[in-house]
Structures are given as structure tokens and as C-alpha cells.
View 1 (spheres, rainbow, N blue to C red):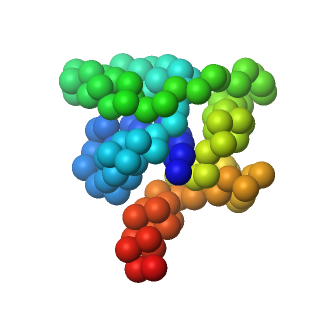
View 2: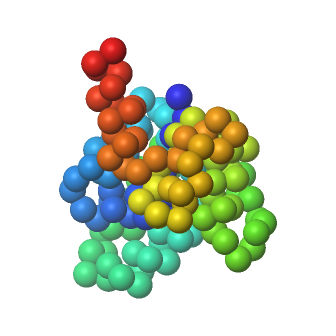
Length: 132
């Protein structure tokens, strides 16, 4: 199984306790995480701008991020980082792309890759398998 978390899911998991954190931990534990340098770049920018009161957040992010499989970035469309991340995930054969972005969630399933909210991803990846 391969799981790709968009940047905001990574950020939420890094800064706040909760569902995104649980998805990140469980996906990392199973060696399912796939990411790109673009996720790291976006996360560093946001952490440096919005979370200056949490100086350890960037180090925490990086410590977990390096455990993920890093796949090549996609550079087009240059003006839509969400589309770039989804395409990079598709290119890497990811099964589940996790995002809270409503615009991206509206894309649904792409070429067999499910685009799910954190809640739906948690249910499908970690709860449903226990029920079956």
C-alpha cells in the first residue's frame, strides 16, 4: 500500500494532535508513506511563516518526512501545486491521496487512486481492515 499525504495533512500532523497525526504515524509505521520535495518545501515555508512560536516543528516534520519514500516532483502545471502533488502520487502508483482540500477532494478517484479526506482515509485504511 502506498499513501500520499498532502502538505496540509503533514502540517496538521506535525503541529496538532489528532486524526492527521494518527494517519501519519500509522502510515509511517507500515512504511506506506510517499512524498515529494515539494511537500517539504511547502511545509518549511508554512512552518516558518505561521508557526514561529514552535521552533521544533520543522525538525519534527523533517524527522518524520525522511522516513517516507521520496518520489520525483512534477513541475506542471506550474501554477497549481495541488495538481502537481496528485500527479506525482499517480506517477508513483499511490493507492490513496489524503487531503482536506475540498477542491482536490472533488476530483474523486483518478486512474485508480482514491482521493480521500483524512476521516475517510482513516476509516478505509485502518478501521475497515479491522472489520473485514
